[in-house]
Image (cartoon, rainbow, N blue to C red; front, side, top):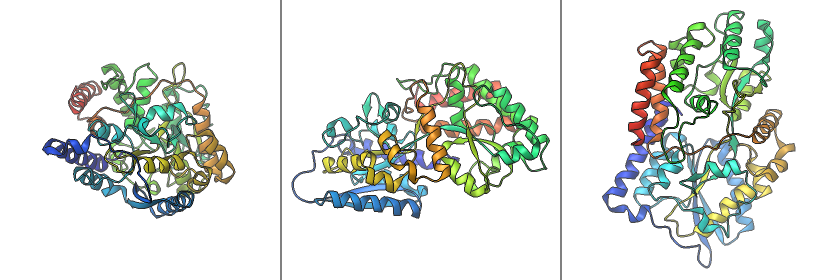
Length: 432
């Protein structure tokens, strides 16, 4: 998440909080009844580009054909204003019935009573075939508030052509360590033309989570506390600085400049990086932008303790104030469990979390899409620790990580002082 989108989230959640505190508490907490008799209209909100809108509208048409008593009104727009609009709608008791969310949003809204506990519509929403990891992703305090639209996982995207031009062999992702990653990246940089880096980025907020998990820790605990030590945070900032100083990654100025650019403007997208730590579903867009046949490798340092996890791309949630919860649940059920919907949407919202849907779309995927699906299937077989949606306020922590990491790269803070500040600010953000 970029610094700008994090600011929007904090503003959106603040608006929601203010509404609940100013007398709309009942509207933010009490779920409504079921769908009722006769034709009903439900509203379905999501964000994305025109391509996603076209696919989603085709799926909606299939749903309406199968459910003639339910009319679905689509509401979509660019991610830029999506959550500000949603916060305003929730505050005005005018939320869409089915709401697409991402990241820590389900926890932010569920903790304020704005989302429906989906166990109340289990008759219309079958979750029995979903991957357990995907179900866990959508739970808050043990209750199911979100349903995964599909899964991603952290990966190292690799451009074999850059490695070949540098004369550096591709790493063995079954055994490599973070030190191997740093040394390999530095070697690619040193043996490549000026402007090409071994790795396109230093570290991200998400890689901090992976870093911690490989040490038996976690970014957050089940009860909403920070779950990692100062030593881990310090080592994370120290390694980030090492990547920049050694030339393995771009220097501080270029790293900051590339924090929020489009896929096409990343070094990997421009064909000027050997590796990039990012989400697996970026492979298709990066391959298209670079014009290269890219590969996915597992994260370094996964042995003896894996840090990887399956991350839901987005979540389908239902408003706690919906007047047609049964109809809304039927739509969500169709989107995640129906082969007609799966064949239309394919991997646009991540690799489906229902194995039967993955099988249904396998032959329809592009070569890059098949690589993404295979990677998710491989990760899904691994024995990794559970993940927990961050507590209320945790959406600010990714911005804290990026800001402090920038201070480390520009040497305004030492890794040790950075770790102390990160823990202090992060605890304040989540109120712990």
